[in-house]
Image (tube, rainbow, N blue to C red; front, side, top):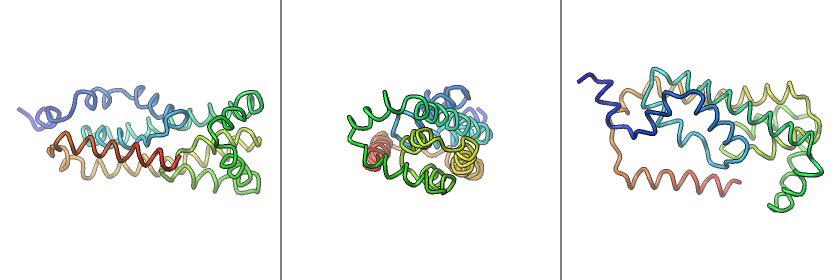
Length: 192
């Protein structure tokens, strides 16, 4: 049995299937940048480690999905601020956070504000909606997303390509995987 066959047999089936689906990663990334406040890295890392030779393609797919999702929320903020966005934010109790972010987006630091939010593990939904609401430059907005999430996803790609083959043969007990997923979800909810 070749080393590729051996390493893929220790990976869960969903990891292997997702590693072969750029569209799946694009969709997951778009969802993560819009409605899912859970870091995509919890899925990307095992997928990239499962297929280190495809890590760059996986990172690029995640970046494309993130930018597409960001543009959807930018458009939602631009077109439906009063009838949809503001009432939803009020219902979620996020109006003050949203107002703080939109103030930062309007004071001339659009690139830096979006970049810092998108590069951090914090959910970026409020920044993407806010950029649309304030009518921020779509080009600067997209450039900030590409720069920040490019560093995150392509940086992970580089790490997976470098260290993935060594990590691929490791097997974690199911409880360790469950605890790791729980920690990522808890951090996502705390930050959001």
